[in-house]
Image (cartoon, rainbow, N blue to C red):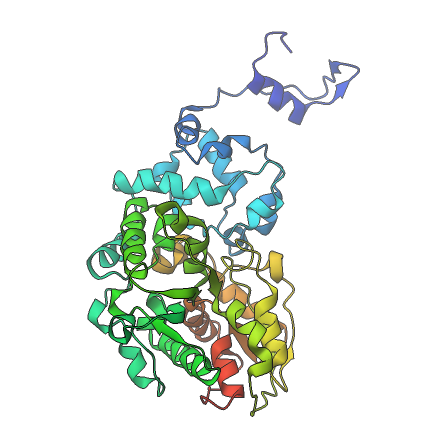
Length: 426
């Protein structure tokens, strides 16, 4: 091998030869390939937030935990780096949109290649260049026009309260301070299954005597998923609007239903001047277990899916389990992948609005893979605590032929059923 061998020749020689005492064993002849095209990689790593993609040294640890790879996507941060290193444009590649920003790769990466920062940064450029999937752009447009990605009228945001059967004060009408301001979010306000969970939670809060209120049609999407999908400008607009609305009222605690909103209020809204003591609803309820009067045992085997944005992103694993353990009769069993190693439902990072785009590139939806794990665990019920998950997992139950074998219920529904406040489909 020439003393002037390029780094590329040397790398291939290491693969095809064996170094002995500083000399190359000539059993295998080194194979020279062309130089890498690093221009695309350099273009990506020049974007603020995306610098760490260059840290990858191809150890492959991310591949073993990437849910998209597990679902047959031929995908992992290592592969994204390699393809970009070889000159493939990440800005125009499907690779850019398959990441769910679940953060499991960051958990195991020895070089701290941070896809949670990389993907939103690169996506922002791709969105500006017009390369985003049509489904995602539709969700962005709906959010801009209506304040929610479902395209529902803002005036209907509090209509679910009509079926609550208990008082749900709307702050603009209540005209008094409250202890807890409940940020409901979009899917719990508009989606049929989300509304059922909201009704259950409203009844629990009333039974516990919590002095609470909601923003109603003054509330807009928290915008965290839009931010992770590349629409930073839209996120800023939503954050500023929500902060303005929240700042009009007096309250002590902000309680949120959605882990994605929880993430936004903890880490992003303070950058814009919106900072309040913030709790996911399971964190708020867990200390109040002693006040809950459980009247209806739930004699079922239940497994729990840790949401990525409540668990890995924000470290909360115990509150949901404390609530489930408190329900009489309930037998909590864990799936093999749980807590910090939990699987992903596929809804994060904009995945909630790119189902067709992603399913065409996978052998199985992530939600379907997770439902199979829940069934294999022997559970009768899959408990969730993220508004994205009820609809995703219920569809997955049907698509995998497990109808009648597994129920999907929000923890709020399980608690309310055990307290005799609702009749859940158990």
